[in-house]
Picture (cartoon, rainbow, N blue to C red):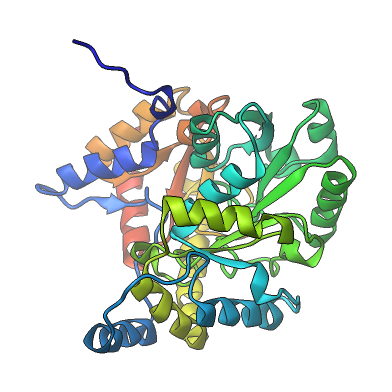
Length: 380
């Protein structure tokens, strides 16, 4: 007897997780330098850990509201005024189980099966994979260094009618950012064409050239997604948030009630303390900045001369077409022969990713220097 398997599960894997699994297996016998996974090597801020320990001793940690803990929603609302100078009422704040939970809630509440949602490549692969699983059509927009790997009005007009647009600034995997004026123009185009914008802002705070601009400055109809995983260094705590349009709050709440009940309670209470740890978090960013400078200096010496703009986040996206037209096998050889783990560009771009690889520089400075040393000795 053969039982049915649903088609929604027949989506592409998140290749970086496969790379990490193979690297972890190899690490049993040799030291692997991990430049594949986009997660901080630093722990959660000290005050967050302290708050969690205290809470474990005194609270039974039951469910919170599906939209999240009121105190945390208030604190995030205040943060928008402090960090961006933008007023966002707490009523529009939704706490989620990581940014992944936020993407699922955003896509499920804003789009129906058959709707067309545009997104650029290279880009975070889970966008298109979640859309496909939900029966929503991802409309791929091919970008290059000419557009700084970000959407333009011309590119949007070339794809025909769309119902949504996903943007990311700083982006994964390139680290490129959309400046404030270009962002305003994109928001206005979406409003004029009845296109729901979803802005991924999870790397805000990790920037090297100019401060980021939140879409909340320009739009009340866009969905804005952020996370405690990157700047706040709380990856495993699985906590994110959304700034939602007023008309989507109740649909999102109903979906959240049924899909997740509520976000992790311990993480929510502890995350309140993260906003009192800015000095510690900025030291993390200083570490990323140092790692970025090392790679921007050393990689061209090793032949990796074509590098995407690294405005923010903690990634370097490198054109390796002078070495290979198969980034997957190139990364496999790098792992096996140089013991350096990196992610093939095909994870982020099904069109041209075979010519690119991504290095994450979220680790320790010593790891970045060791990776450069190993790559300089590798015959590729």
